[in-house]
Length: 69
Image (cartoon, rainbow, N blue to C red):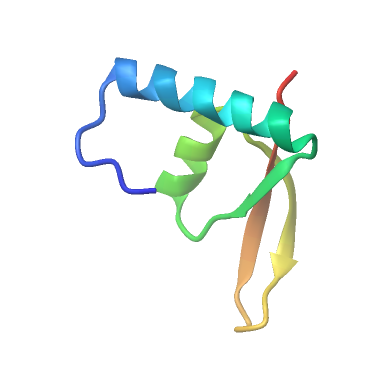
């Protein structure tokens, strides 16, 4: 995702779409983060920290999980 102009309305829409996609998919979404700014963003839209994984490139990255509800 690439957001060029961030506003409260865009964040609200993103959270709604994320929730709808998760309900349709029926399973949690996961993401890996590689910087504190991305972690703060993930938390702000409802992702919760799960654990830190050691990735194939040798870097440890936090894994985040999103579930609606």
